[in-house]
Length: 510
Image 1: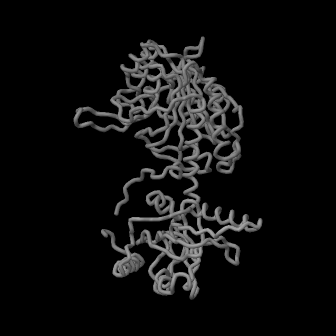
Image 2: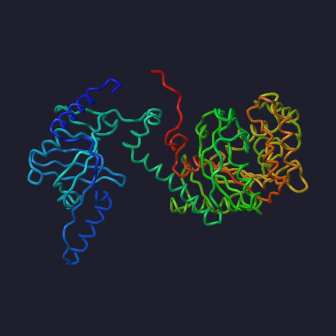
């Protein structure tokens, strides 16, 4: 072992060596588990019910396996608990059943955190706890490092208290230990899996087809974001980790796949915050012959379905606020919302310079020389977003911050776009998608002129995407949602790192 061992670890290593000297393999190859803790308990309770009804049924014998979480030696008997993926169950070890030598070895050589297998007959103790009367046990994996939480350990007759795993950064760095000692953290990720499963179930039921698009892309696009860059040695070509699935998914509409979706990773080389992570899980779907109004309906239905399936209710508590995902959501026009909260009517400020002037008059802080779109985004973030607590659709955005959305009929400067806001932050984003290849090319050119060549959010010209559009793209509505943020909302976590198993962290100075 490369790290310096603690006294506890040295003690456990000595136990491991003693076991091997006795011919006991601490990491055997085979396990013969017959039941989980839950299935064993259910099977025993079924037998109790049958006996109470006067039926003759034999006792149930099982083999359980799990992590040793408590030990309480009491002379000729020992009470212990093991934990598996479905819960904890008590073990009852008695010298009369397993011989005193085996009981002594259990108490002396096993430690909290070890994985063991225990076999015997299920019964209920006088205290009423369903337990396993152990007839044989077997060490499955010796834990050399004590779990950093909760329980005290008896070492050489002394009680050693473990330091609780409370520091968030330590928890993220050692997520394996965090999961092992915090059942509530395990539940977050079980809920996350249920949420993703429910999203798939809804979309599959609506006739969508799940697809996979490239993660390594020769040209990034579909969002305003800075990409990660890598290099393919054989192709002698720089490639980008995707920032969005959008342009590839819409190519599939051209090919005749009318309803498509993807759930996967996107990567954006940007800052980290409570709601941003450089690697995140995204859901995007595209639906031919739909517009943003239809996508609003699908969004409401999908999130209500997820709440019903995962939580059994459509109200959730997030950061002390009760949020309702009942249908329909309130709808608010972006321009009106900004006027209400910032006092600026963006229709009166058609250029970046005029918007700067209006912001300056009101003493607002902003970075000079930004595009009009970025200034509007700043107004949205500073003034309007914090007011959008209940699930709300914010709709009709300026064209200059939505290069892939279709303009509203009769209003070329406004596009059919909405964002769904909950608890003061953006959850989802959707458009009536632009399907005019000439208009799309013009938008790309406008972006090239407005954004400097080294601007992180400059949207590159994608000639292949334009070629695909020229073959004919059906009218369609598109949608994107951060799955991590949805998990935050439905599990009442205020930091995105709490819902990502292994969030990236800065290297520690050793």
